[in-house]
Length: 332
Length: 252
Image (cartoon, rainbow over all chains, first blue to last red; front, side, top):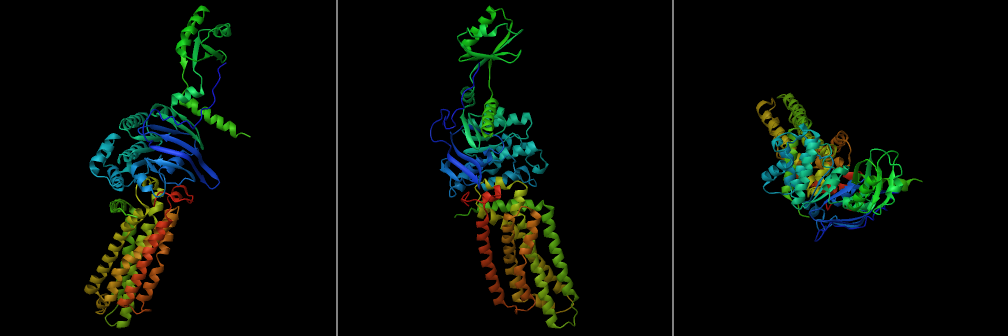
């Protein structure tokens, strides 16, 4: 039968082949509000130019982690380095000059126009060539034609894009994006994804908090899954491989009379299972070796094969498995 | 600590833009001064030509008190919504993620509130002066209004009373969760310094240049102290999470 693998350690640095000093380092970072622990003993590194996904259920401590790294909240214990600067109260201004944070709600001044909102933030960052920067930022988020509109008259999706444009203004070394596609239609979300891809090309480090696992899978070089503590960290494909064995899904026109006799004789197949009359799921070490052998065995057995495909576990499977393990561990 | 004037100017510019488009702020700036202009006008125009000089002095004192209510009340209402207003519209967190220091934010908010308030107070004073010279029936009114101590008191006290109201208002705003409650408390808290002005206006203390300057110095010291106290009270973590920080956050 197919077996699932143990959960990988969250301590693995797995910097994705990047070089030099990391853009972001958290070391045993902990934040408590009185008796309540927002997050505990969180350690990770994010390389320059990396798109790092930060996933977890509601209340997992994602936003509090971002606020802590953004100097809005002081950690209870542990240390961190943000854009090469040690996280401390004294370094708050210096750190905030090098980063930008886009909260889930963009927080725009609704009585001001799009341009006036961006002008204000450009002033706070002490930027030069403000007009050009605003124009570039608005073009990047496809809002150049709405520059003179009052933010109060924009839809939620457009406001989200203004917030993203604002985050781009200062050319930050690290961008913290909290649910950047929340409230966006699929086309607008796709544009944001392309934008994030473009930022990656420019070497901007992106710390992406998201509930959309497809988004994380598509955009992130690595992901961390949080649930108060860091549950795991790594490339999505590595996490899949670590948590789930590779598998082939075999669909036949009619149920096999004796599937165990067919599959157990194939050396490349480690085990198999089938749910009622559903497809057969074969646990394999190497699908490229196993698939031809399985095909031959099925044809030899006279089976009418409809398809043989490699089973792809999504990041969602990884996420759900980890959260499910947490929920089980908490049960009395 | 080095203050960045560019960031302060950015806050001031943004505040002015918001005032221009906020009917409640424009209403406060327009209605309160009109109310406090009508009352002194009635006082000085009711004075007949036969009214003795001592009564004229008392009436002029009352006029000054009413004129000084404007720079105390208008900024109290504006300042009381400054921080809690940002929090209510969800703009506080993005604002606090920028390099802006808390002292710069508070100073920017204070300057933006003090400029229109003092401007309005000076305009009201000028309107009263001109009206008294042109239309007052009692010839003693205009000279009484134009006394050195009164003029100095108006020039000095308008910004200093406004300063008091602003810092107290911002302090209340930083601890408040509702704009209206903050405005009501801010308005109440702006009144105590007016008590001293009232005593002077009603000649309980004989108004003199020395007394005006002394009281102005006391108000100035109080304003500076309040700025420091309110800045120290401005806790990023508390404003964002509602929980007081045990460690300092954000480097001011």
